[in-house]
Length: 111
Image 1 (cartoon, rainbow, N blue to C red):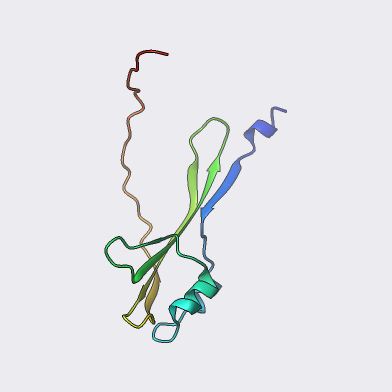
Image 2: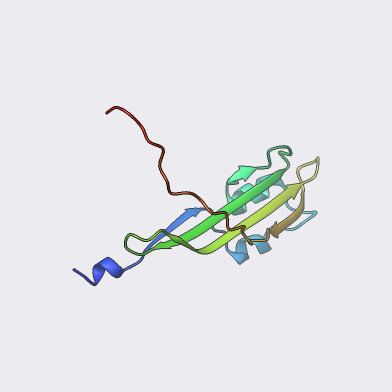
């Protein structure tokens, strides 16, 4: 029982694309329909430009009571022109800013 407590729990969230999927998307040839068929629905679209789609996938590993650590992450951007043809499909830089967060809690009153 003690050994199983150290076994990591691996979770995958989002759409973790594989390289072979991206090679099927060709700039200047593939359309929105081709992208949907090959990659699936985007995780999100750009806030101010619906012609830019993002596919975000993340794999985390959690050991015991420790916070989960990101072990694998991929962010892919697909941009279309006005006619819906792919202009570019590329990986986005995965460097993250380490933003510290506060673990203090706000006191609440009552039950």
